Image (cartoon, rainbow, N blue to C red; front, top):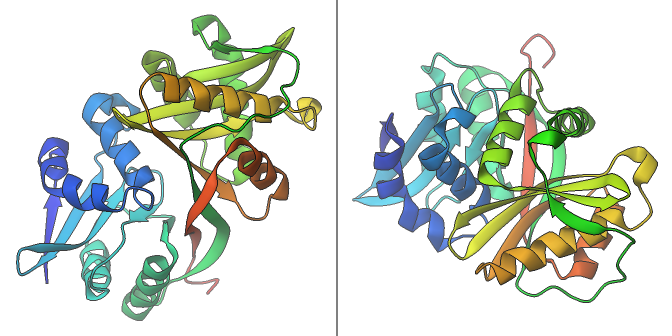
Length: 283
């Protein structure tokens, strides 16, 4: 098993794209981040970890990390490739706060990492990747969709930070970077009912595919149908702009969001787990 680590995102993409596109649903997050690194590199100012494992000239697994975020794993043809990645990361100077990926791969990597280092992980979130190809008719809440603009920046900063806090993500200055990139990409949409009441970010990563997220509605505006209307409208806009499929993640512990997305037309396609690292003294 051979591992190649890449410092040039274009070189990584040239080598990885066919493998990632072969399982687009499982890899939509890796594809989306690759697209951002290619076209909006300032979004992730720290050098990313980009690794491809191969055996007999064929890719076996791919790993990616954009600090300060968790390690992302692709589907693996051979789970020995995950041990190879774990061994490589042992000597990598930047420690990582956890791992995300398809369930079998994340569990296999976790076991390999613990065997090598003694450090373990705990399950932080069980998720599913969902796919939409057609928006179903839904009852539309009052209000309308609009593209966020520079004048919305203070509100966007507040909501992105609130979303990160709610799901337990690292915040630091990253909300500002996310807002900067979203505004530059014209990717942030607001549902407005007199005032902005819900947010959805749309991130095309191919000419015909996009990923939606984050989606956020402040507590005082929830249970009024705003998130449903916002995501349905954004999904329809993406389809009208040439995408024929949209992806998003749902937290299985949140039945409300799962119900909303199913009603719009999102269908579950694969399981995805998010694990957080446990400090050795806690393990």
